[in-house]
Image (cartoon, rainbow over all chains, first blue to last red; front, side, top):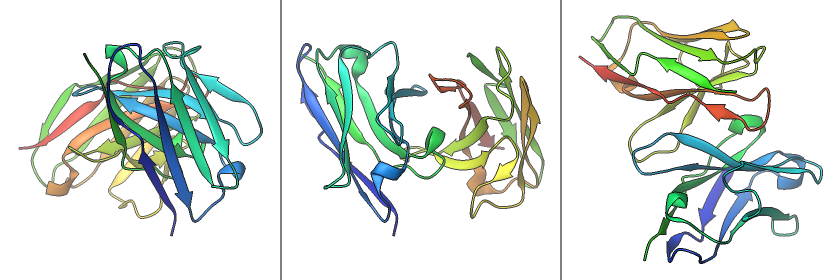
Length: 115
Length: 106
């Protein structure tokens, strides 16, 4: 069964760091585009970062230089390292598979940046 | 690329047809997807490539358009079709979503 399970969210102070994980099953992350999408409370959806199936990555301007996407093929897991967090980074973070997430999404993990 | 959806809210009676519009600030060819999201849930893919239904999506959902103008049509609306619908382009990074259309069951 194809599944994406996110974890690592929580409450963090402004300026702090978190690392989100997305464990995949039923397919290999190295052969797929893997992305992170976020949704602020009561707001719309925003693509945060994408790991293309090679080594190339991309970031939204709002997180470039602060967030880093990576993957561990041996664990079939994708990560999002988030540094210098701001209040506006608060939201549910979803892991998605495939270009534009057309091959599936996880259920999300909540990140709250607040003092 | 800025994606603009209209209307913001749509109230439709069961059995009627809902027509949702999505415009792109420049051409995205057919690199357009539609998602449905219900409260507390992850988005669900309905349409990709502007007009191809995703696996398991009922035939009452149909997508059309190319370039800068797109439409999602929900024929014979069912009560379970309530939610927020987002269009999204994947022609250029950053992939971008519209602001959403909320479909309410009248």
